[in-house]
Length: 574
Image (cartoon, rainbow, N blue to C red; front, top):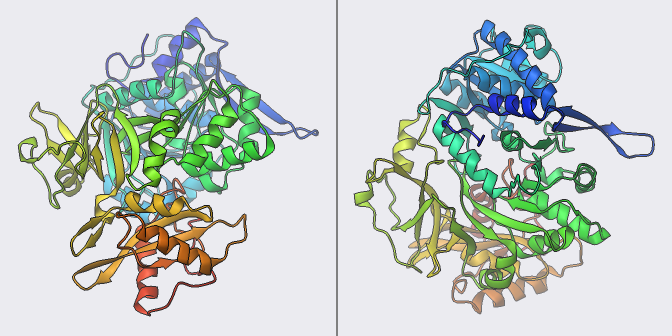
């Protein structure tokens, strides 16, 4: 059967069918340390085992009160145990809540209290966070621990009962809430993005196409580098490979590229979704050492732009059969458009370096994307929007069956970000600026709220930053605005490469000349050199411009020249 044919998000039934028809198919592969020779050891779990464990845990969940609609926080990295828990939660129809600790320990408590959680499933460390930082009720009967044990919490083993021969599906409807996924919080407090069963089912169907799942050619083997997507291969009856990353301590930028490549090659991973910083590190490591990843044919980057150098490195590592894609969207729209890396290399990266923005490709089938006139306040209905013609910059909005319909118990943000459509649906305001070209491709220019408001117009980050990033001494740059007379003053903050000797005084002069030579950046007369650009904790790729702007404002207000030694004031997120 296809995934979720009745628009009910029920992973347990998919696993059960595979267990009945192909019980020895591998469902989960977990790295289990290294042997004496340094090679990885692995634990492999079949669908027979996975389905049996999930179906035996589900009755125990019901006994402790976790059932249809129970708001259940899920806070654990990818693992076999978490796969068992996730399938059991879908069997009972629980309403799961997913949040990344990168939003901040205290912020998590404040965000989660707003949704009034009723149950908590997580690793022991997460339960300690629940009790210390109030990530949910401190005293909770519906507490389940995975990957260990903890006094006062139920283990998966303690919840196991005799699995029913014919498990009953959960008593839920397509219009019932299925999950909450929190946004990164990089542009304000993390927002609780609501997915109904029908939205979540549609999103998984779309992602199957995005990840290149093709059952006629091969069963999917996917590595869950992005924790929120770890159940996607299971939803297609494929194999989920747990990445060699300690998500409790390692951010994407700190993941070991050697270990990732070794596990990919050992287990024959076909598809991989990751943040650009992780993919960049992995690609560069492989190219520098002449390593290939012959099984890997689909790499998807998301969460921040994909650039030319990382795309080239990944394609070189994968070989002729490999494809790299940049997916564009948001937590509320997973995803909206896609751009082929090969097409970008052939057609659009040169335009990006010239200041035309980043091409994120065409919308997926069934997804409607429009460019509308930028409006600062809420827009109630489609009748109030002005759709702009190709080439004109505006705000990007998207509509589709997989798009989140609201923020849970957050009417102000729902009103701000949703536009009622004529057909009874709605458009989501992604909050990004961009334009459409005459071929129907979308070009992304940066966040609307982070544009630099000049006295005579606006300056968008991804019109300017690639111009500076094209210099061989520049690792990356960030455009910010500081208050000035009649408008903001644009400042470009440049992180230099550390793998080569750089003369900052000469670089400063060259970058100003580069700015003056392009009409899009000609108004930029301030170049600063922070030690590192601050980036978001989840993807380690998005620039945290509010922090960078505050740092730049302090330096510009003192009248200092560009420092000849990188300033230590701005640190990357750990």
